[in-house]
Length: 372
Image 1: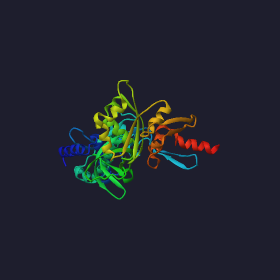
Image 2 (image 1 turned 30 degrees about the vertical axis):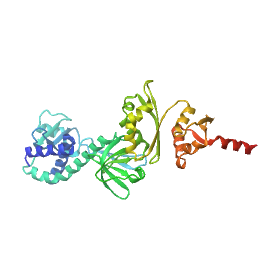
Image 3 (image 1 turned 30 degrees about the horizontal axis):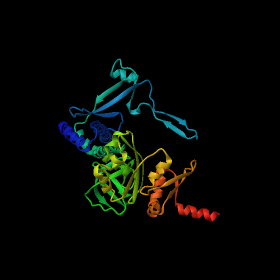
Image 4 (image 1 turned 180 degrees about the vertical axis):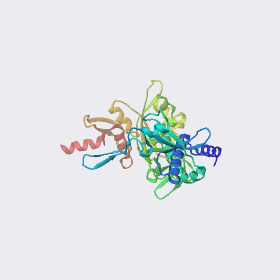
């Protein structure tokens, strides 16, 4: 392979793998130095220089001028074990000042003597020997590049394609890599098709020896939060603030919002004209119910709102320090306040951070009569 062919191949690798040209060249220089030592000279005082412009490859033998040879020292650690401290300068690359001055008059300690030692058939031997090392470095660089691209995606909403599945997971093609979407993190009872586009929430991004591990979810409450931000511009520009979001995937989500402007209705902004905005979110959630409620700094008012769709709720803060409250409703609203399998009151409690109890006035009176 001549210099022009090398540069052409290098440019192809850089473009295809989307990695730094310098990273590839440095990997080549390291691999070629290893190849030279293995095939031509076992000494370690050589380096390989690749010209970034011409592609020319040169093997350089070098010596550093020293006052006295240094082969390292030995010491002991805290446990009494002998520890060897390597020399600052490669022993193979050391040359005494007297010898160096015979070769280069006037040279000083610390300066370097260099000589090109590139063999005539080095290109053929080096290319063969270095291929595996270079490929390894390219894979490492590619993994690092992908990690850099996705490391700040945790907590974000991404769109990918369902590429494959096994008994436990779906694998989502995100472009340069695949994310893992556990089937346990799917919305209950939703059906998906291989090859279809899918929105996912990134719960974790972690570097591994095989590349970035990207864990995804459609069950996480953050998925609902990001869907709202995607559909509602007022959440992005700060006109409307999403105070909190809680969720029981497949059943119900509760989203508390408020407006930073008096002339903007936070609930209306989230619902959209004729329900267009919320409809897009509901479609993505496979029919899961969503309660969009107004946030209030007044805990009594906030708890009333949080128990939606129950109406005519009377709230009594029974212990402000312990954050406990009693919600009183009529018979018609009792089941709505509690929800299916207690889901509504559980979500309201998580949203408001109050321990809630729901009773009817009749139940309270009956309890009072028993005490008497």
